[in-house]
Image (cartoon, rainbow, N blue to C red; front, side):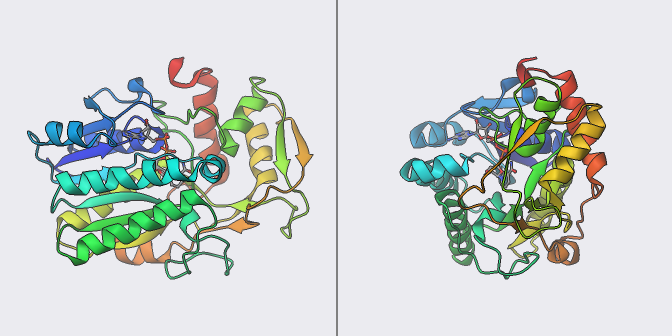
Length: 327
Ligand SMILES: NC(=O)c1ccc[n+]([C@@H]2O[C@H](COP(=O)([O-])OP(=O)(O)OC[C@H]3O[C@@H](n4cnc5c(N)ncnc54)[C@H](O)[C@@H]3O)[C@@H](O)[C@H]2O)c1
């Protein structure tokens, strides 16, 4: 990566902290900005500023004395259900910070955390970049809107961008430094690990009558170190003058909820207690990436394609961090 100066917003969060560490280990000078609304201060021990991106004046004041080669913007609110209940909060939380950042970082290339939720209900078995973007919840809509904003900015010559649309981010750094700690936790793998370790009651499997091999929903789980490497490559591309764009980041392999529970149980030597519940409104049956464009244009592909290997990193993190970052 070399000595580029990178601002990582949301760098005390799950994916942001893993990426900040990844870039810093490869020679980048990383500054993390986070308001700690969701993130954990102990997730990052380098250069840090505690700042809320919604506070335009504070951001302007702080950024006046700084110069960055690139920005990686992770900071956002990320709970789909909450976004349905509080849409205005989500539009404000996920769009306004990008406007503020673009105002203070004129011309600076920006890598953006987008999501497969920008696509809405899949029309094809795997999702490529040209799949229509019809988000079905405010969270996905805010992310699609930011992609549009960044395209407009780029077309006006005000800064290159890379929108990286993650599928289900998962796993922990093999070094044991970074893992998943959301509050409340809504993601399947941490919930399953905590249930198998007896730290929470059984979990609910939402729907066992889907048209999938075992009746449960199928998702594409992408390891956080694979996401980190994609950010490094995408940032390098736009810093070097390569064209802007959007890329889907997944393994291309679908894994069912039951397969995840089996793998977690196997890894931790204790079955995951679960109950079967009804389908959840708005859950697509199957969400799997077609990652061919990222391979062709970025030269990136996932290295964690074996779900047991990915889950073992998460299992170790949860065994060693019973209280997450508070442990
Ligand atoms: N986790 C996933 O599976 C997934 C999938 C697709 C996309 N994403 C996107 O990736 C990004 C990171 O996700 P994550 O799971 O690491 O989330 P996270 O909640 O762990 O991290 C987000 C970080 O942003 C910070 N933040 C939020 N609002 C802020 C503000 N106004 N000013 C400063 N800091 C602020 C939070 O404190 C937190 O540390 C998000 O943009 C999310 O939408 C995540």
